[in-house]
Length: 338
Image 1 (cartoon, rainbow, N blue to C red):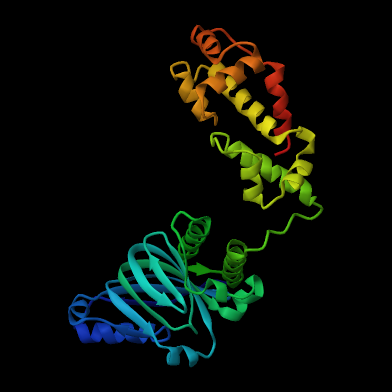
Image 2 (cartoon, helix red, strand yellow):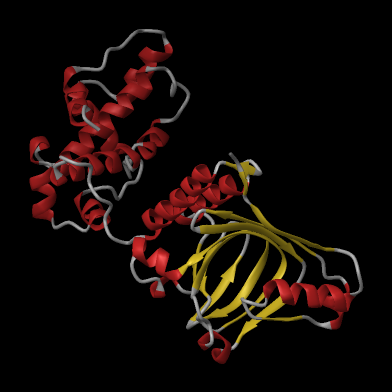
């Protein structure tokens, strides 16, 4: 047995301006009052598709310019409060919701709730929307008030993940078995709770928190080797740790700063010996691996391996196979259990 998940579709491109405006007001009536200038009303068109997926609604809306106003009195009359989670695909918008000013463009994620006063303008927009009861979201997430009127930038993990998930929900087949539709809705709710919850994620059953944090730190170091500021202070800020806690977590490696330095040198040695950097000046190699000065890089490299980076580069250029010395390979043990 299958059940259609298309609940409502409206396309406003025909009829006169008064009809299109009235029809759009009827469609958007729950959200607020639609306002347009005469010129905007004349050229107004819209198209929207909504689907019910278990406990949530998802939709894609395209519309030309309009303004939406929800007065304080209208917001106070809301019965069942809902939360709107929108990801912009085209156009832009700006205005206010609750106590926040909003400015959002392509890729932005914006969150509003129906019981808040709002006044914002949308210009030539296409956006994907998730709508769900506030009580349902709060059961999974906690209070939603801190997110009301919040805009996440297009390159934020929240916007990228929720945007991709919403597009996937909209692109589901037109007909689904009821159980599959409900599963899709539950997955949406779980993903929103995970992305928006500011509390640390739950650890897998049986996981040691200190071990997992140490692994996270190793990954962080690996990803930031080229940053000359990488060091204990930067790691402590990133993970909200004290220096003493950091050193306890990484006690197996000894001095954290020295470990980072050895790791940078080992990676630099590997890149040069692989012949991938035979034509790259030493000063650029130094910068790539987080050394501010070429001189300090050359000196540290010589001390670690017994020859200069330029000498290793010459061997690589000549086709001489060079094995990473034990003094450089020891640090690899640090990353065995990422």
